[in-house]
Length: 382
Image (cartoon, rainbow, N blue to C red; front, side, top):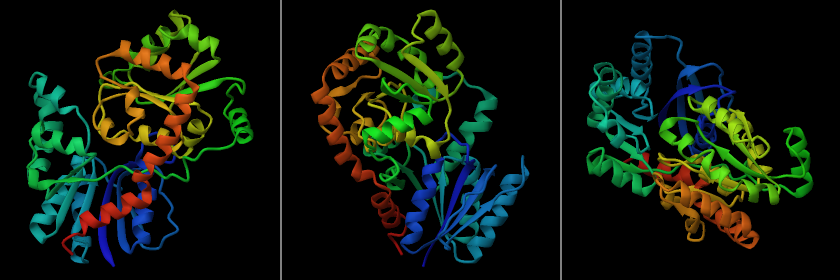
């Protein structure tokens, strides 16, 4: 059986982030004869797996003791034949893994995807940020065996902008559990709206995003809603904003000042294990964002059959199909976004065509397909 260590930086049952998706991917890999040791750096809950060849190991130490604890865990596993370690995002997890691989042999795969590096380079030097973020990342970038990112355009970005050596780069996709993000019939949709305390007579436009400056939440909203407020009211739409962050309070303030509370509902974070319910009751999805890597929210919306208006941030263009791409605008054009939103609201036939395309297109990113992709790449030399 193939052996893999997977390091996840945090997990909680109430977690609103996309780490919840990782569990299903690991299950699918385990079904394909991969023996997995899942190490969670910060765990408030322990995930349960029905598959015997996944063992969860939650770290107990904090502060400077945590990387020492991780080093010792990885050393023991290395001596038991676990020579491949995959780390998602966590530099603190990657550095002990790199040290173990250099001392005792093995391979380290480090995953990251995002277009924040250009912005970071433009910032004035800050010694604290350098020690906490820049130095660890440069260590990881230099010494990891493989630097994993995706989709395809992000590989080019990390080679040309982040200056990762080409021979280290591997493209792997984010995955989506298509069975979880499935379309439901009108009767079930109505019942689910009641469960979520949503008006059953309204059509829903969904937004799911961390409400931060780097994502551009206040750049796009409430502008794109304000520009279409009359149409939204005429067509009986309401916009649900899911997420939290530093810009949420200001967004709520502006929504109130502009008297948009009847068509914009900000509901905060929801556990990712329940997020599919909001997609299933929605009719359309919007993804206005300045920064992305491989946006999971986009493939969640696609799997749910939602026609979408999106910006071209990060690897978005690699993910969507030809028809959906006609409703993709440049990240700097909030005016263009507002116009495309109006066009899609006004065109029911186009909504149906894009919905069908998205359902077909997203199969490429199914958990089953992506699990095979991971196994091929990680164990290609075995």
